[in-house]
Image 1 (cartoon, rainbow, N blue to C red):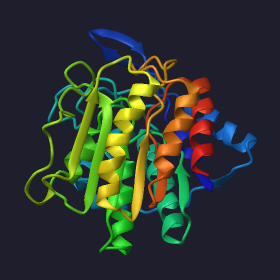
Image 2 (image 1 turned 30 degrees about the vertical axis):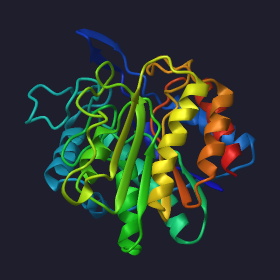
Image 3 (image 1 turned 135 degrees about the vertical axis):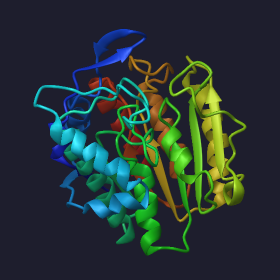
Image 4 (image 1 turned 180 degrees about the horizontal axis):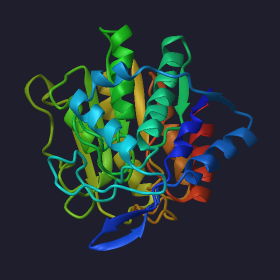
Length: 321
């Protein structure tokens, strides 16, 4: 298995976010990814620098108006400054936790290149690839960014795969603490991509606007969107019961490729998420996912404690390789 990585993520260093009326430190720092990369290197995994993919690949998922707005806004920001949305609707970010920095557009392109490099490896016959993406992606919708996300990496991987394998089916299993509202939006009417998510109950947790059990897709996509909202504080044994149910949906779909939106903000030491998973639970998680016969792309989403990220990612990937 190769681990795909793009150093352009280092250009994006957000400083703060507005939460409950107070400015707090933004946790999406480069070291959360660097810690995983260093751990993989020590374990002997090959770190492959992603190849650069052209901007038109974005338009398989994202509205060109949004892409151009983000590029122009990012290029207008001075170094060491940040821009937060002021007028929702004009500003195409849906929260006050996702600043536009001078480097965010370039870093987001690097994140897309990372996941598309991983997808290309699967198209060329590899069975498993790890996309060490940052910024994350699953909150980015067709024409909006948010939740530290600018472009939807998992969705772009699915579309890129189907570009070359148009009669094939893709499943996306989202195991970040937060619901992937963007991924759900993108595929809500699509019966060729199954989206299954386990996440903190949106009645309590971000993004609040999606992730309920009754959101099952619409039109051709009805029945191809499955949400498993759970209470905060869930521990490994109970979590694995839910994961088994989610994986049954994936197995019944019989996808050719499984994209895992992997968030380590489910770890008990993560200060952003609110689950109570421990290191060994990620080994169990990986063992269960390994039973799905499809090729797999692991896409890094959240995870904001660098030390916990490194330990959990190693446990998870050991079970898959």
